[in-house]
Image 1 (cartoon, one colour):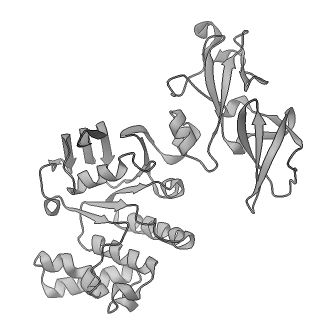
Image 2: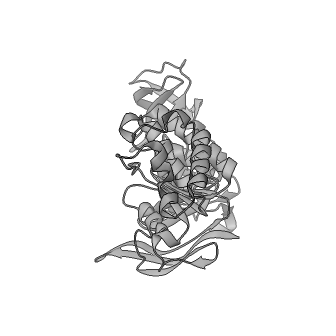
Image 3: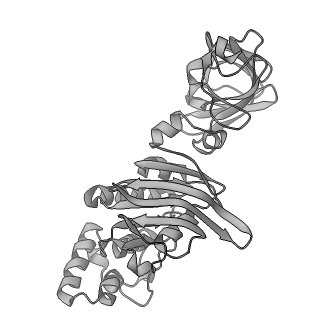
Length: 359
């Protein structure tokens, strides 16, 4: 059963439309992550669900109940913000229990739930401190605890880790995943960080310009991106995208005007068709094939990212740290056909089809 459902949601700010007839279902207990660049509409979608913004059109349901006209407090959701949103004059314990005080919960029950949440988030030693006396990671745990203590139907996370340093982000990702496994509450997490998206998501939703580009399991989307945008946005380094043409024989493609890849009996389009070929840097093979110039090299510690050129297009390859290929030399490169993706002029993934059908 869907815990969250958006149906034909639109949102405009003045003359600018930021969400376009968006449809989305999130099943009960799922940890869904919305990934996309700044300005794609992901935070707006979260705020519509929380009731902090009103949709211009469409319907929103939580657990089968229409909520788009309800006030935030009536929706049974809890939100964790990027800037923590803690009350600076209150102690950690007071911050954790404040929503229960407002709801009229008895003091004994508030104390019990504050102690339980503090124990879960390892905040027991900080209950009497003010937010200003805490580190960024501790403040974020308090913000999470304030959401957890309400026992909502849905947790909403609006880029909650973006203010933390790299080490703390890793720690907090683990905390969030552990909490979700323990509590099983349906969660919707918004981020522009693909590492957060890939590591946290049960279901990944990739957005661009107010529309959903692709929905699926993170590994499935990474291995089979539905559009050029998804291919270029998901992955670090991103997928190489190279102009290509289906050759006259209809049995292969020519990349960058200089590298022919035989495809056997199945091709993406008719001979002469201009398409885009994509391949992940980790799938570029070194040691045989066409000689491509090395333009520069990035040291990654556990490996090296080598930037090559094929025709007029740059291409990255990941090599072991022991490989000391120098700038200005050439590398023999091959691109295995089983790792190639092909995209049409509309930017969408193309299926390979028998030569006779493509002709």
